[in-house]
Amino acid sequence: MELIDSHCHLAKFQAEGVLDEVLDRAAAQDVSACIAVGTSEEDWIVYERMAKAYPQVHYTLGLHPCYVPEDNSWETSVNQLASFFTPGNPPVALGEIGLDHFHLPKDPIAAGKQIIAQEEAFKRQLAIAYQLDCPVIVHSRDSFDECVRCIDESGVNWERVVFHCFSGDTGQIQRLRQRGGRGSFTGIVTYKNAASVREALYAQGLDVLMLETDSPYLAPVPHRGQRNEPAYLRAMVEPCAEAFDLSVEAFAEKVTENTREFFGI
Ligand SMILES: [Zn+2]
Ligand SMILES: [Zn+2]
Image (cartoon, protein in one colour):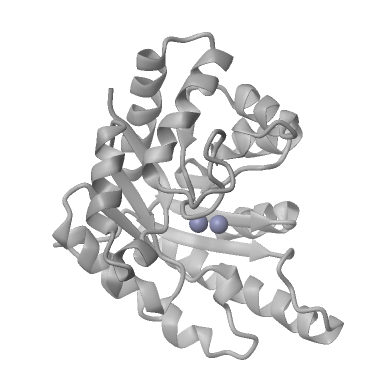
């Protein structure tokens, strides 16, 4: 069996000197490749080098909405993005980018400024994705409608868009699918109180399904509460395969094929 963790953050593991162990534990659980997702200028170079050093690691670059400063200084970072997408060791997607209306400052004026800056940075990055015609990883928290509108307006090919860590409902997944987009799912689908997310996973169907850990966050049951890592992707496979009434092997083969196709790896 072969699995791919389609979204994880590995920089902390490397900084602590445990990345080799983490990747070994992943391989021992059949997670033979990982997509390491960039969030700000600080980790972009880290992931570019990591992907060069580890053949099983692919990387993506983007300015995460929670790292968008209120002033216009994000422009300097975003202006560098396209230069990474050149032959040799290019990122496999642009992201994660999007909107996050959950983690906003308490002060309403600061929050308003942050909302505007996030949207400008998101739109600018979507314009880059449109030019590059590359896959896009979207982070959307408490901002589903706004994210959909920005993508609609950008002209980006929806078939190349994934809403990562999808935690909405069936209605939202249908709106993504109508456009050609998709959601990818984390360990949340193993949580007892997440019935609506499981329904969304089932409603989306197998055709475009991808799984992710989003480690070091959101460890699936039975690891819930621990620091998450790519190896724990394995814990999601049984419950998901069961939902589709498939063998673990057949299910894994399909989601791995979907992930390879989406990222072109
Ligand atoms: Zn995210
Ligand atoms: Zn993430």
